[in-house]
Length: 279
Image (tube, rainbow, N blue to C red; front, side):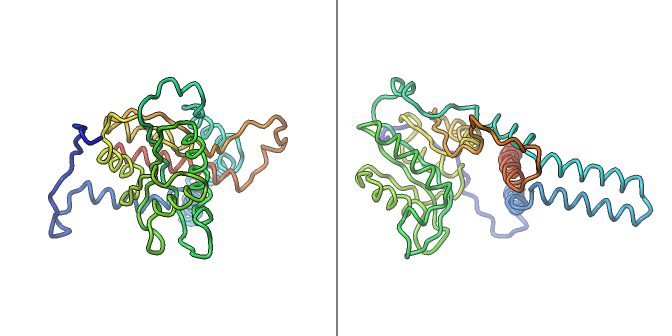
């Protein structure tokens, strides 16, 4: 809102030499570099490699212990027990957005759909350029958008492909899916969830009615970012990785590559929490 007293704290100091770069900036770069390397497969490979090296160095007992850990990691990460248990705990923190929430919301409602990647390909419609995760989030945001007569759809994301921003692609996709263009706001600078929360706070303050749409597994961390800025947001989780099946597949104990993918989502969220704690 224009009259909001919400203030973001930021530093105006820009170092001229990398030698004087604050440690927090260096830590941020380190975390970003490690982000794509922390996953289940790499952990198993590193454990196996260390086991082999210790065995060759006649540290056979240590090598055998590491080999046992490697097999244990493989079983835990490749079968569904641990990944699904952890994902389900994370996804169950907030329920899906439904009619029970409507009575709590009044005035102008801002529905912020968090960005999730895109590929700028002019051959495709805007919805086809969004990642599957991004399109899933946008569809849930539009569903909620249609429930309110006074809603504003907020799309965010910077330029990561081609010469247009993710926010711009999401806006075009929203218009193609029937959203009134005059009720869409773009935030074209953010590249992370934290930056999306900051950009929204700068634009609308902390007193507006806000609904945040993102993956159910990512929602706890996302809500934390908005809460840290003094924004009380209503969660609207979507894109559930674990869905209850009335006829579950019997061979859930068998190793499967899909379980590695689930576990890597857990690593990503845990890694983000650790980064937030340090920085």
